[in-house]
Figure 1: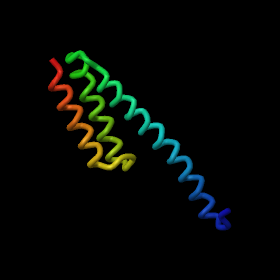
Figure 2: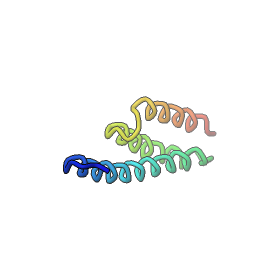
Figure 3: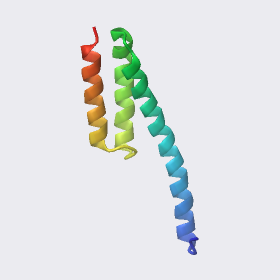
Figure 4: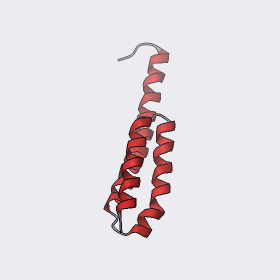
Length: 84
């Protein structure tokens, strides 16, 4: 257990941030999963900007790495473009 006031506070902050980040990362993963499960082009085209925006925000706030966000966006765009 930590002995310093600052380290105790740091532990509290880290725990709070971890829960916050986990929630938003899980929400984004579910959105990506939902988009990949979509088979209709109109619906997928409508969802793509929202999911891309979500991924960009997570990357900006360092919840996920910027390259991971870029890779996901690229793959999702290819998937949506291939839908007929």
